[in-house]
Image (cartoon, rainbow, N blue to C red):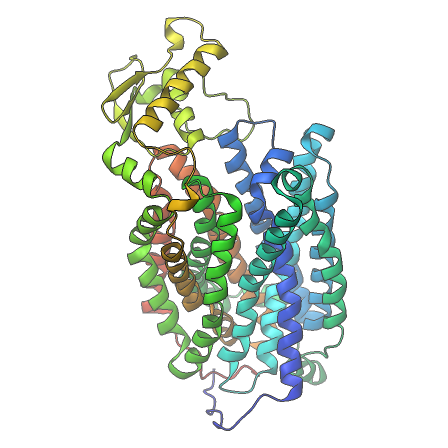
Length: 552
């Protein structure tokens, strides 16, 4: 592609450009609000819609349902990306917004598992799939629309407003959840109040649609339409011709995958880690995350602006490198700051499970049939997984009884090989293990008085800052990477494969890795490896794009 001339430094955004940015960004904020409510309320989703399985499986399965919305995002990108390249950017993201808002509203009305049985999680999955399809078409449209209105040399800054929308949507959802649970109290919120943030989305849908309808079509698309140069077969041009498919693969693995895992680790995995692993109460977790997001969000604009000056590639690559190098240290410090008693217990009284590996199941059962009580190893590990306690696995002689080691205490698990095990025997064993854990210093919950809140916020801010580095410039990079006639289609698919699959599945996959190994930090290998792979591929294959023309 041809190089473009630098923008004169005195250029200021026109009134129309400001309207485009504001309307596109605000509408997208509301869509992200809808999408991320599920992630924030995953514990309530588990109790109301997935109560037919054991607690550990329910939580991981709830995260998997959360990820299901991400799984279909690439298909939404194909469907709506094609429509956007054929009929226009504006009308396409009006349709995606309507689908998103109505699906979210229906979650608030959905009967629970106790009321309609297995139909509840099935309908929930269907609604999440509709949300994912809609979001698959939304982001590419908004980013393309804003970039095609942006003047030369300002695309990084202008599109970085779109990049703030995911975090602002999460921030808005956090504020609504915090306000709702504060006003009605924890008991009422857990019973039915968690539905209120979903129901509010119908109002946001109306506002968002009205805002978007004030916009005109993209000038780049209108020019193509007047010239008759729009693509007649955008899917074929984008993905069945090697020249463009090669670009899709390069930008996917050389930029988007790393961006995605850093984004979801720094915001969602950190939130789940605080609440599920470090046992910080939900209200406090939400407030701490909200403060970190408020402090970090302006840096999306900072790094978007900086990418107009020094390039998209160096900022994204630096963010991936810093994330890969720092995650284990940052999450270790987070444990020390948020739950110091747990950190001390992990260090001073480590837990181990000595068992025959052949008798140990993977601690995740999506169909809910495995109660993890058929072997002594399963009984021991299921108990620790349910408590969120980290442990090491030690191989024992075949056929032996599994034993939990808590510091110097040995606690042999009930062994079904030696005779039938009833619920009372398992309950008694669980009580002994809990007492041993408490005696060794393992807290049942994080003590609010002992949480070093400034330190937690500082660590979360660093995680969010890494997010802003990789995410701030990515929209401009994607828009500049592909020709205008197939831009919506071409950029949407790698973005949503990266964020929908590699990023969206991160919380469920990482927690399943933790459940399988007993190491509370083991799930971090997922983003560390993915960010490292992106760094290597990006350094060698990803071109710089900031001076490219986007009208071609």
